[in-house]
Length: 349
Image (cartoon, rainbow, N blue to C red; front, side, top):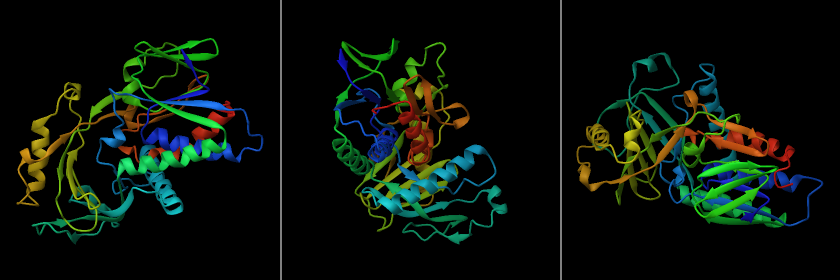
C-alpha cells in the first residue's frame, strides 16, 4: 500500500483550481511546515476529466441577480472567473461574444439588446441578446498553466506532487486514514479531496457520511475541425442548442442541454445530435453534413436541483463535485473557502 500525506481524486479543472488556491494559501502561512510531504493526484482512465471533453465556455447571459440562490451563484462565480483572468492573465483563456436567440421571456430584460447577428454566417436572423465578454477555454492549455503554477508553489513548500492513472472503486475509513482501492493498487492518506463526480458516482454508498446525491448526464457534442469563421470566438444559443466557434483552434462545436435517460451514457444519442446540427444549419446553410463531424463524449454530473457540493463530507474527506454545466466558473467561487476549511483541518499542513 502506498502512503501519502494527501490524495486528490480527479485531475480536471476543479482539482487544478483548488490546488492552485491551496498552494498559494499554504505559502502565506507563517508557521510553514518544512518537513517534506507527498501529494498524490489520481486521474481515472475510465472517467476522463469532463473539462477536457466539453464545450468549455462560460458566461452569464441567462443568470440574473435575485431570482434564485443558484442564479446568484452562477453570476457570482462568473465575476470571480473574470477577476481571476484579469489579475492572473492565464494561458488558454480567450474573450469573445455570446449571442442568444429570441425567447419570449427576454421581453422583460432591457439589458438584452435586439440586434442583427454580426457574424460571418449566411443568415439575416435577429438575435435578442449579446454578451461581449464571454470566455472561451483551450482546456488543456489552461490546465497545463494551472498545473505549472501549483507545482512551482508546492516545490517551494517541500511538497512533492505525484500523478497516477487509477480508477477508484472503494474508499474506506480505517482509523485516522482513508484507504482507496483501485484494482490491485491501494493508497492511504489522512486527507482526501474528491473532485471527480463521474469517478465517485458508483461509490456513494457509505451510510452515515454526508454524501450528496449525484446524477450523471451525458454531454456529447459535435466537433468540426479546420473551419474558418473569423478571428473572434463566439457562442450562439439557439433554443436548446449551443454552437461554439473557437477561433484559436478553428473549430466548431455543436451541442446542447440534455435530460435524456442514462441509457445514453454508454453510447451517443445520434437523434438528438442530428437535431442540434439541423437547428444550426438553418443559420448556416452551407454547414458540412452531419457525418463530417466527430462525436465527442463527456459525462457530466449534477447535484440535487443543479447545486454543486463543496465541503467536508467526513473528517479529513473533502469534495467539490456536481459542477454540471458550470465547471469553468464554480471552482473560482468555491475553491477559496474550501481551501480555508481544508487548512483549518490540517490538509497538507
